Image (cartoon, rainbow, N blue to C red; front, side, top):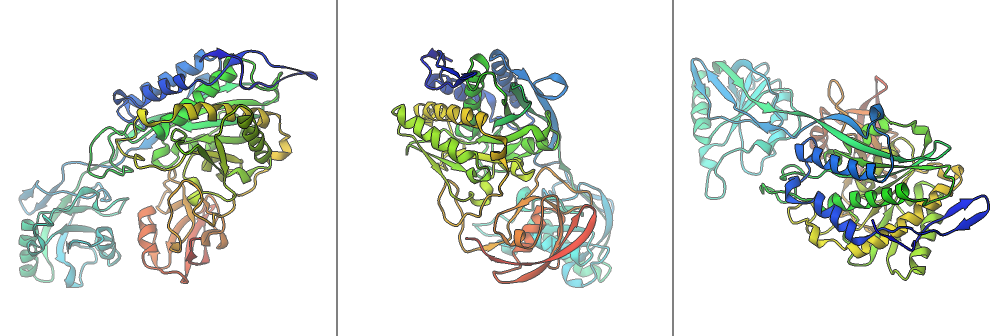
Length: 559
């Protein structure tokens, strides 16, 4: 971090005010951080990976060198939590009598358990308590086929393609990712040739089907340890502003990648080495100098989150297990994808969640203009689609105001091409100066100005996210880090103005049934939505504090 005449500093000692020389956010240092974090050696910073751990040590050392105070668990810099990695296919087996079939597969949603029963045809009408042989055709929703069988009582599924359906466009093989989530029954996939042979045997066997069948699918669901990183520039009152960004990305692709089938390092330079670099530079400003009101009453907690790409897991874990009292957190400033400002604009979302944000953003914009910068803080008047899908939503969930900075979507998003060379580092340095001014204003704002205001519903396509207008809308926000015992989909909240909000659903509710569809996980929920249309009214059953309740929900179009 270079030392120059300060672009910004506010120092208050009694009624005196002075402007000393302090470190300035520097575009070269921003580029250094982004380049290191998004180098191929980091292998895409997958949550729970060795390279992700190495990135955490890099971040820790930078925060330590800045002179900040560790604020993780047990007096350290880190907060650890467990995550379940995306499922991986193992070695599945099917046994019929004394014959073993090892050239079989399974799907990601299959239960990882061994079970024995008779195998019957789907047309037999006698599937209750049996395995059922299902025919998959191109275009079928495999998970829906399996659900229909289990709803009829099947305790396991063998699924394949009729050889007659194989052509130059479809080889008949069912992919592991064809059915996601978690089902309660074992599923084995077979080749078209084996499916044809089994179909013939089932037909010949009569109503009892093929006896002595054992399914042994293997789905590996690895549990890894992830870590958040926290460092404090302390104040005297104990109150803090949380400034955060996620430092994880997608590894070699897979789930979440927009380059399907491509196994390549997803470097995540913009998403979100850019936000991480910005947090590090701001942390250096507050750690190495007297930036902000002096003496400080309100501190700043700098946080780097893990597991964001897996469902905001790190920030959600922290708000559920805070390393400082949550009542001392006045607000959150979230930086996610702030590296691509070719247009000279940065989107600011959720500013309506606290009265303090408006004046502070206006002052930051004025400050940028006075410095000769033409960067525009494009403040949205309503919330982003889906809330914006980033870590600020974890704070909204617990009633803490949070504002979100986002430079917009681009063609490299969640692809291997999101590389460090494509970021606008000069613009990032300008944004850093504006953010520093913003944080000073937030440090001095009255506590009463941080009363949480729930974000308003978005009514236009303004902002950085893509969205569909006019389609079926439920409006729940899943809690991806919560897997309820006994199944269901836990909610972290509802979208403002949505059918879910109007139906009275609340954070912490666990959806159990939508219409006549039992909800075991988010994939069951998505299956359920496919059964309804705009204008339908359905009964939604949910658990609230252990009690099963229900409400009526009417679907209407997304704005």
